[in-house]
Image 1 (tube, helix red, strand yellow):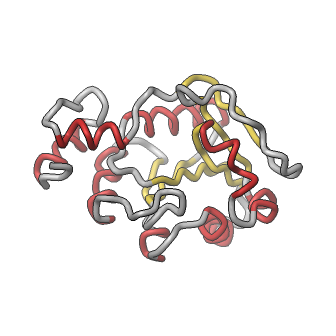
Image 2: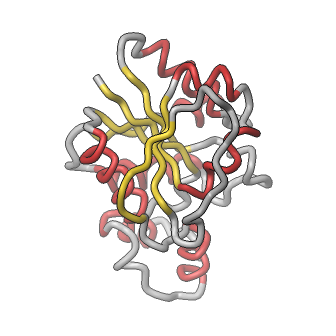
Length: 192
């Protein structure tokens, strides 16, 4: 089985996340996608702004009804900074006979050489990257064992940071966030 792992803050999850995941399934024949909200992404210090239980609930609402998509609370349950190598070890142990892929935006490709234990990580997972607006010519990493796969098509120009700002200012986000997530944000008075 081919399993895609997609990490991030998901603060909040938006349609760009879902489009990226669906494109990788279609183009790379993934059988399953597991979305993994970070307890704390190392490159996003200080901590994310929204409590983990809200980010998990928003993700579950966003993927409801999408076959073969699921949410894992692995990184949240571990607490602290979330490193990809630890997460991939967990899923490799859980699915030892399956092929793992890490799904990411092209803005991360140039920094892969600096990821913790990149050589070990490259032995456990292939990387699928999607172009992000403004990052179309990412420098290629020099780690020779990395297996990089481009996913055709662009991620929409949406960022969670921009969405939080829009929500704080009372601007609409309905065209950028899945409807159940918009409802959840309103009901829980998030990002005000």
